[in-house]
Length: 201
Length: 180
Image 1 (tube, helix red, strand yellow):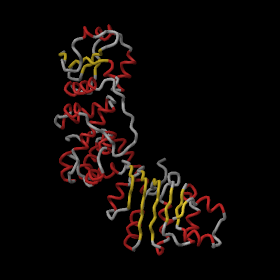
Image 2 (tube, one colour; image 1 turned 30 degrees about the horizontal axis):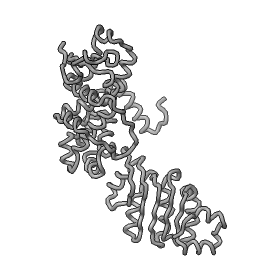
Image 3 (tube, chains in turn cyan, yellow; image 1 turned 90 degrees about the vertical axis):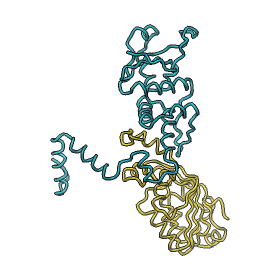
Image 4 (cartoon, chains in turn purple, yellow; image 1 turned 135 degrees about the vertical axis):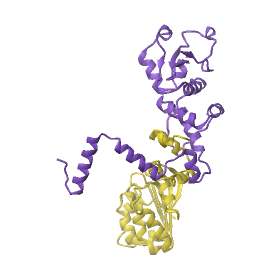
């Protein structure tokens, strides 16, 4: 198990009063370990609830296994925790319902998200999964900004949007993957509806 | 963006909420699914005037959108047709202030447009060219009229109303705080 020495945490722990700064250990699905401050974790509603429910003491954090985050890989988790550490202590924004949303991307976030689209997708997915509202806001803003001044054809290429035919094919494939008995019932129901019956029974 | 298809629906909506009207319009043309997704994203518009481009109008006033000021001008058959087209199969519009500039020959359009505004949301109706007492009597019965805090008419029309059997007495004035 490798410990990721990302600039996620201050290494100089001796200089920090232990009772005020507690660091949790998390492990990505590719077994990379991260230490993240308690304050930074508060940016993620999911993780914050998780650690609250666990009620770990400082000793527990060291003695027990790292908390596994099974859906996120190390590269993405490193970005997520870097973001959380940078924005620790900041208020979590509340959606005021304004549309288009007024979201500014800070310089740090812009640099952090200067990554390829595949990793950006994973970052957004992780922000959604871990419920990190502001990270989701800025990353979605970045994706939305990609659409500026683009024609529909260009947008299809930028986002790799499926065409109507591809959507139809995906729908058919999903139907075919359904349980055969469920499909039979559905077809029977449709047939009865066509014949004018109101009730299946 | 390699994985649009695999974004959770809420993330897709977040991305679209961050897009401006032009980007949304381009996006809506990409596929039926794109259009359907966008039609669920509300807009909050300060001002809106029904456009020649019906597709764009429909997109801007998608479900749950709010419009602070909706201005409708009908001075020709073409404009009337355009407004009719816009209202066809529309959901209710959440409008705060409705400004109707409609030539007297199209007075039936007043009621039609007022009916499309959410009665619980509207605050002001502005009808400077209203000349028909019949149309006004219909409008007066609408919940939109009753819920409005301000109904703006011309002084000439108010005088016409005052000398007609349609005049309701002091109650009428309470509903009509301003004349121009």
